[in-house]
Length: 66
Image (cartoon, rainbow, N blue to C red; front, side, top):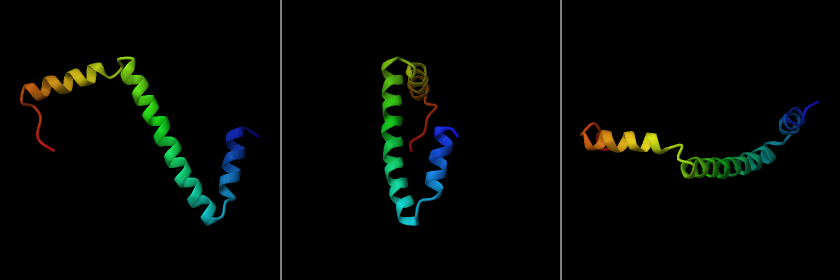
């Protein structure tokens, strides 16, 4: 059995309150991981083309207020 399969099994056996606590923990864990990945991608220049396009479209009047 793989590590992921073991985790799946453990999660499926949690009580309702334990599952709620796990969801809260995982949401925070995932948000921190996503933020780090975003920061790493930005620092590496992976988002530059997207940002340049957005600025260009805005300057051309091709955007609308949110």
